[in-house]
Image (cartoon, one colour):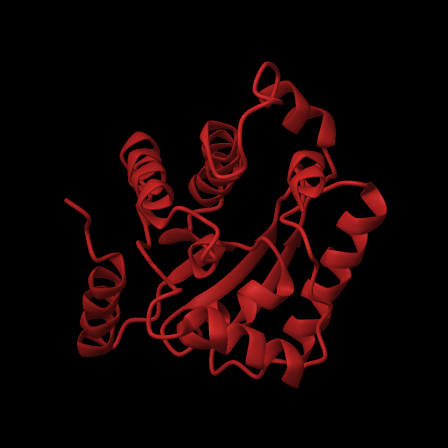
Length: 203
């Protein structure tokens, strides 16, 4: 049975509002366009630090371009609370090590699930090390990503590291459509493939 993670997130946000709390959130971002709607939705409730950890993206020039767009977006947004950015080393070799023997898998299948886990695990560890209250991801805004699987992975990591995971399904309530509108508003570069060489081949 599918869980409505959008509704579950709304319950968390409502509770934070009632308690007048502004917890810290380490938010993994895949790219500026997807993060636009997610950040604007969450910034009334959290001190947000965006972490850009995406070793799947290649070539490196594409990775750098997307990272600069992320930084540009954050400079344009006006949050009522803290809005920071953490850059990460480009480690494409780690992604290919993870994808070994999964090269022929279809886009959206097990290779992608392993990629979700790779990026969320890194985020969860950083959240633990730096004492964030929550960690989460922008990935659920995309209609091409499996939100049920993303949340299952996030919750498993939360249990493992004892850091709260912000469940979400940001594509609900026209979230993806709104991210496109915000991308136009802020003149953001919108890529035409997910990021890895395999998704580019299937494009």
